[in-house]
Image (cartoon, rainbow, N blue to C red; front, side, top):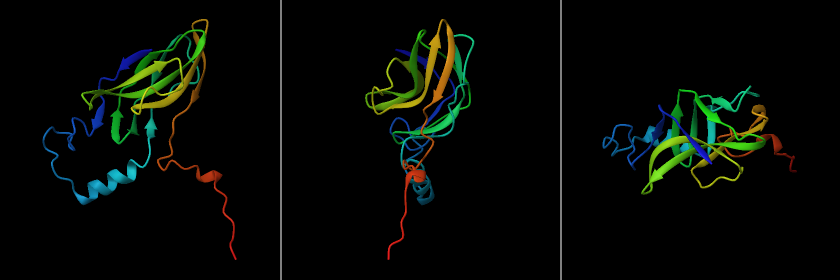
Amino acid sequence: MAEFTITDETVFPTRNDVSQTLNKGKRWSEQTVNDWITKISTDFVESGFTVPATDPDLIIPVAGGVAYLNGYFVETTASVNVTAIDDSTSFLFLRLKKVAGLVTEAVLAVEVSSTPTGPEDFLLASLTAVAGVIISTQDLRNTNKFGVNFEALVFSARG
């Protein structure tokens, strides 16, 4: 529906390079690989990418944050204003944009459906607006890097 530019994002790796400095990432260290695999076990938000509970108009700030999305590290420190869709519930996504299969940028997208448009979409929140005012938001971020709800697990003793 609408996309909003993030101006200070870091996406890693990008352009199929494993370094934040282009063409400098031809070798991995064991520690880097270990840290990377540990963190990308599933898509999740490590911190940030939150919205206020309400807003007096349709423009709402989204806090900067850190996320791991489809094997990419995404970080932004700046808050970005997005516009909700009036008289409906809209959905906020963090989206990686690709050209020729390579990530070129990260954006925030507001859509009418909670269904991701592709594997590079990560659902952050719902925004409910009535008469030009955001009356409620719901946090829909996955903040569990393991992808398992450990609270729902039931253990029993075996004899």
